[in-house]
Amino acid sequence: MRIVPINSEDSYSNALERIFQLAETAMEGTVEYNELEILSTLVEAYEKKEYPIEADPIEVIKLKLAYKGLTQKDLEGVIASKGYISKLLNYEKPLTLPLIRLFQEHLDLEPKSLIDPYPTGWQKEYSPFINYIEHKWKDKFKTQIRSNYIYITYSKNDVSFEIRDKFIRASSRNKSFYEGKDLAKAINLAVKKQLIIKGILSNMPKRVISKEHITQI
View 1: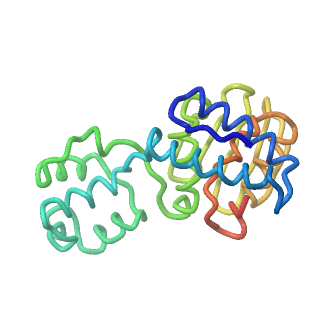
View 2: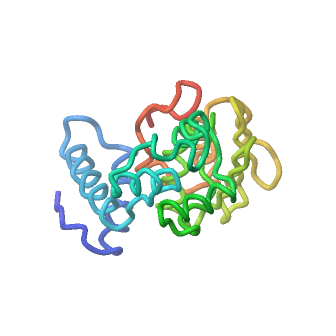
């Protein structure tokens, strides 16, 4: 076992390739398994440094409030009603253009930091997955977030994942290969069919979002 620092894209790519190899055969308690764990830790540290997750519009607002020493109450009646502000900061309501203008005026926020769509309501369950593919695999995946669905496409092989409340449809070239409630199962199936590269699973968020959605991978 020869471990080298991961401090460049080349060493990062080499480490990922080795992880994919070891993940297929390494058994717990072996030298190969120890190598897999060490490489995974090094890769995770490199990704945190090189591919930080950017703040979404709601996080931008919360950070600005903290910076100015303000609280949610300071927005009530100025930006919107108490109920709406509460729902907005809990990702239950979207930012509208009039609200963006008010945040620009009262918190000195740049409109461009608030215009990106973000998951609300039931979509919040998929936020870690969306952040992961947008920031780690942004050149390969495109995400559309609308009020009643999330549409994710893997541009290389024309694979799509249509996510609606409690329903997921995965397709390749407009032909469905999975319909159900488990996003992890749909992704695994796409990998097995060699429609998506295996690397998508290597550092998938491991927190359980929902028993019906993404589970431990």
